[in-house]
Image (cartoon, rainbow, N blue to C red; front, side):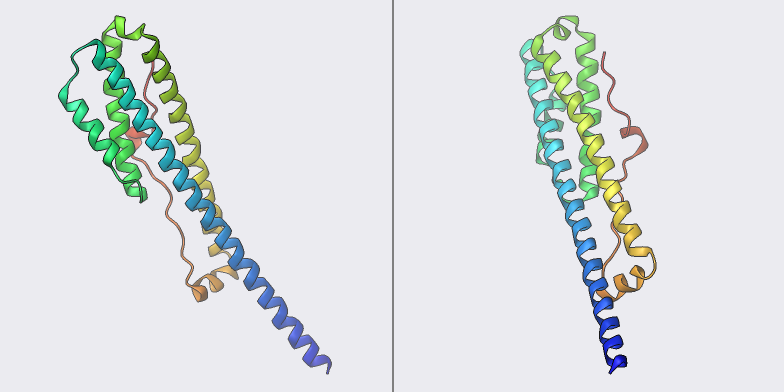
Length: 180
């Protein structure tokens, strides 16, 4: 009789641990997915602001056709995978750096209030994207750690749960654009 109670108790403990483990992993995965979506929103906002900045600059000077083509391409880029985000971020930063360089070469553009406001807003978005990247990678680290420690690694294999990839950016695009 006691043996049956002990066995049932052990089975309930194991089942409870499996349920807790699975729920924890799902919470972490949902957090990662949510942060990914927030990165998408912030990058779309940045793309829109870069477009607005170009519109202001265009209104005050003849602007390069190639920049407009890049803006159109940037707005149409998908942001579904980390590779998509990496490519879009690379293009946005190079494009924004080019716009800032143009504005710096035309002092009358620098004094326009809309240019100042948009440049400041884009700088704020850059900070938000950096914070979200950190949060994303922090959540991935927590998930991956949860999946690899013993005995979770055994459960993860049995349940078919996989590690997530960290969000990586090329070294040259990890630097925020310079502003004067």
